[in-house]
Length: 393
Ligand SMILES: *[C@@H]1O[C@H](CO)[C@@H](O)[C@H](O)[C@H]1NC(C)=O
Ligand SMILES: *[C@@H]1O[C@H](CO)[C@@H](O)[C@H](O)[C@H]1NC(C)=O
Ligand SMILES: *[C@@H]1O[C@H](CO)[C@@H](O)[C@H](O)[C@H]1NC(C)=O
Ligand SMILES: *[C@@H]1O[C@H](CO)[C@@H](O)[C@H](O)[C@H]1NC(C)=O
Ligand SMILES: *[C@@H]1O[C@H](CO)[C@@H](O)[C@H](O)[C@H]1NC(C)=O
Ligand SMILES: *[C@@H]1O[C@H](CO)[C@@H](O)[C@H](O)[C@H]1NC(C)=O
Ligand SMILES: *[C@@H]1O[C@H](CO)[C@@H](O)[C@H](O)[C@H]1NC(C)=O
Image (cartoon, rainbow, N blue to C red; front, side, top):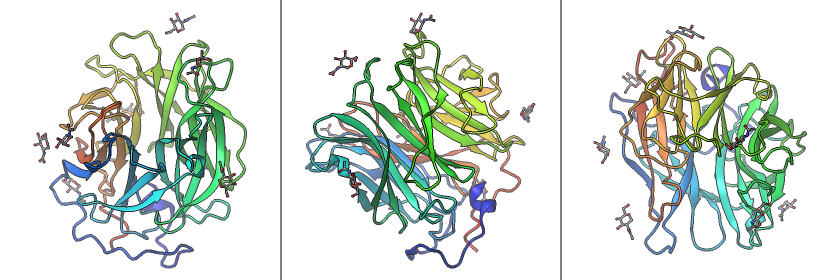
């Protein structure tokens, strides 16, 4: 895993390091559950939250495993993504900062946030820089924009970096040309931004990515999942690297003719996260016949067996789909969690790799929702290298 082996702990960083106390106990036997991160204040007219994202900060041991979360909400006034921080492994949370996008300075909406920590220096941005992205829609609804903001002080202050891609105004009908749902990763010295793209006349919607070596200049649009059937709408990319060096991309498939799973989750496995388009596509169906549906989120953890465990959440089930055979299509196990169902429920593997944090931002279209978390204990043996944190020593 990147936070143990990829880079040494650096005493001096090219970052303004914020002093954060070491948590007293990182992971006891008690598994955290039912923690409230945020409830919209009674004074707001809009009490909805959704689409939560969570980020464990520790690539340079600068924050003792602080966590950041964000989500969509309907705060009064100019839109922003709230950034909440926990310095006690998720037990308690406070507002840490707000990310405003100048695209929405005169109203509009911010959708589909994502947070990412650079594991390596990219252009002028040192390793440990936090990136925030999302879909910024101006007040006149004339465009959809995937913009990047960066923080070099652990998420406290934010600056505009670049526009990765711009589409037409928001409209989920095939034939319209917006873009949606960014997800960020790093590969081979490049930052990769994956997103859903309705701009290609050959595909109602496809999944694509663009790469950059400086976060400012972005390469061409490269297809990840572009299907022959124009009507089908692959959406909501998430990507994870597995212990065998291969990469998994999960996505929903809108308008697939499947009565039990109208947004049936599919996945691809590739040797290289820039070449998913040539990889085979699998339906994500569990051994009990359950087909995952809508807004998937994938992570891989070394815990749970010799092959580790792929963990997939979706927007339909309380359960998770687990796979301990590197994505073998016959090996998905539908597994209870006891947690709530929410739209594109987010996952984060914790420093104790037997635990995966599930962050619930609320149901799609819910009018009175909140942001909560609970940790999931991955069944099976702990990873042979399981370690609470490489930084707490
Ligand atoms: C990781 O968490 C599990 C579940 O709470 C616990 O059994 C295990 O001891 C923890 N591992 C470490 C190294 O603390
Ligand atoms: C969390 O809440 C659920 C639903 O109310 C409840 O069943 C469960 O026992 C709670 N878990 C803990 C650890 O309190
Ligand atoms: C946002 O700010 C940046 C930096 O000042 C500028 O380059 C960009 O054009 C602005 N975008 C909008 C939509 O105002
Ligand atoms: C959405 O796009 C479709 C297809 O181009 C178009 O027919 C429809 O008028 C658009 N809806 C709005 C509200 O613009
Ligand atoms: C394309 O997908 C649509 C929607 O699921 C389906 O109705 C149609 O039959 C498919 N077309 C072909 C040629 O498979
Ligand atoms: C590990 O994955 C391989 C396929 O990559 C599979 O053949 C093997 O059975 C898996 N091991 C376990 C214990 O699931
Ligand atoms: C919204 O949900 C909260 C619990 O999270 C509840 O206390 C409150 O009464 C609800 N408000 C409305 C208007 O339903």
